[in-house]
Length: 422
Ligand code: LLP
Image (cartoon, protein in one colour):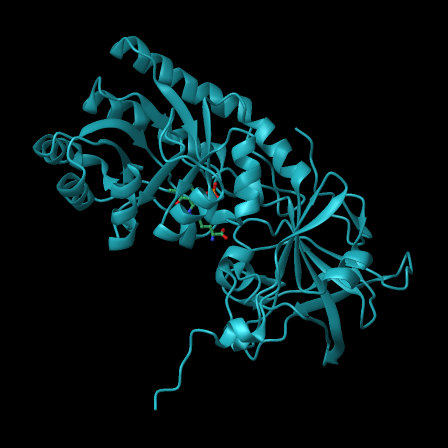
């Protein structure tokens, strides 16, 4: 596995492109994605029969297009994400279900699309079985099971256990089977996703639950999904999951089921962060530097409207500085990095619980660029227009070229859906 984040606090290039040139040409704040990193992460997971990308992590249709061309399948959690998958060229039908709709509810638009395109459903509530059965009787179905425990990098990304709203409770399988039978629905797949940004210890606990659930449903099962959740390294001391060991655990379950069922069982994995996090950089410009008592602040032109992970989860992103003047070897100083929003929490250097913390970064000047790294997953997709700020543009670096894959929002677009009634 090639490790791409070097955790250096100074940086001049991304994938061979001068950051200063990118900022000059495309403006800031700017999301930049390095396609080679995505390809590397896809290659890491080739041992699984199917990689299904959880597009909620980074859903730009150019990214989906490139993943489709690398034979990666896609997951959609909303009607909007189904539209994105279709726009990126995914066929709704075909071997391994190119698009799967995974959710805990059917909103009406999504159910309509599922019916229209015959999209496979991974259902997270027993009520969804009835709702699907009413419009697509005889369908094949996957059940997303809550195994009774979960784990994530934050309590807010833990998706298992009795406090989680996600999935079908593991004790309700018989009831699901009864509901499915009523509509001639066949349960062909089982799926578990216990949380995002977890570790091997917790991820591997899922295997036993999957074995039990699959044996309880029986021979109709032809696919099992390990879900997502694979961590990436946001801090130097963090580690990746040993993918070979993880695969081995799942493959053992798969082989046991194949022997019991006497037919092939496909093994799927459903990562979002692992494929998308490390390819992404949020390039910002330092617009003010000021001292408040003992604290020095670098204020940049991106806020939590652009990258919400720090304020939401206390998430840590590596940060580097690109000096516009080309100055090297600047001394390190302790700084707090904040954005432009009228909220005290608009701070990129904070811990879970909202505590402002310092980061050692090179001494900078106003006009220097500050890069929030590993920002590809759950970065742009969670951006908003708070404070009526325009959403950033997105750039894909591939084959030595910088390609705009989303243009910066305009003030016209900002106001386009609003009307003043007479
Ligand atoms: N499958 C399901 C059913 C999921 O709910 C998720 C993530 C994934 C796969 C992908 O998980 P991943 O491989 O990315 O860990 N906004 C949060 C993460 C929320 C994850 C939601 N579900 C963050 O920024 O950390």
